[in-house]
Length: 385
Length: 220
Image (tube, rainbow over all chains, first blue to last red; front, side):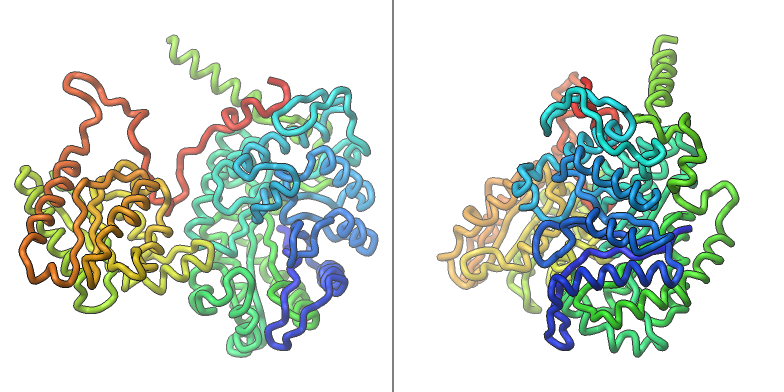
């Protein structure tokens, strides 16, 4: 199972000091978080993508390329890549390039973004959000899988005789996740292609996350990629730890109370009940996190939010350190203990996808197509019988 | 057959004249439905009791509490709705609006609604037609022709009970007649039936991806 950090890259004033980090400091902290993650044995660092203040994360592959050069093993990912407003041609080029730079240590997570005006700023209409996600992602798959692409869709200039360069490393496109909090269409999309489904999890009640993941798993099986419990699932989590629960709450409370997303709303205690937020000891974080598998099933990737809400560098790096040294080693052992043999432990990686060979379903633009056509033929035969 | 009407009342004090009016409307609706040979089950939603939860729902981007989930599901499954608000600064109260903002926009589609309001003076009576009707029109509910407005002085004069009875009768007719999508001998057009959802659960039915991809695969 993979564990790591995901960052939204917000610049938020530290409510305890009134100090606001500069953009340079914020970018530097994200880099330090990634390096610390590798140092303490975490597997993944994922960066958000936003194109508006108070965020600094407008250029993920620039940042991930820099981190790639400074790390050896860390898997570089996104949370999320805006498949709606980015040109899929540029995503294909940028992330294939990053694959080459990093030796294949790349996967990415598609998302639609959370800021309405970003759509018109990039020449798109937010009402087309789902259609953009569907069309652009399908084109992205073709660009990574077909040497020459001829293509005409609804949203971008047609392509005639286009070849995306560089081609994916070892002819093997990166693994892709799809992230969505509420849209069932995106869970369906992930299931159709046999891609991973990531639920942010931290801004919503667990019953909702459970239902979204269940839907994805059911449709993954429907499309013939494997059994429902073999589908590739990732979750977010949000923690703050200290040696005692009281101390963790004392330090974290001002950051929680003033946080951009939920500040000035529910109490820390209420929010802890409503969502997976855990503020307490490493043992409490371990117990709560293990409980996630009770409602989403055995899963493959757990990302934690650590650097947000104006938390200063020292606290952020301390949290990453505690996750790597005290929490994740126990989680690894315990999650494996409960996992049935037929459920994969890790999501597909570059190494596993290369090992699966060029004939593996991963190399098809629509791996489920033959299966769907067979189902349709069976239905038609039944109807005529 | 038993029908179910939800009464949403936004009074803030205990006792409240808004609740008093809501009680009378509920009682009249029960009498009118019973007179049509069916039973009526009435569920009251006192918004004052969930004011804090509604505020949390708003500032967390919609994380529901168990109680709000229950209320949203009750509303989306109701055969009819009675909505009663006090008038604050010439409109429905903020608490009243917050509850309807917390509903899925398809919660009330095609649902019979009786609108009612209370205020200190009759000069606010147009709140029914200028604030409440547009809100329920947006939600594609069916608002009965008679709205009931009660100024403080109306509780000491005749006329209010007749308006209550007339509005309740209009509501009862729609609540009892809700099954009829077909005309005698013809099957109902199920596709045209209004679709309602509480938005509280992830919908189990999804659009198959082939339909989502149609026209977007770059080659068809």
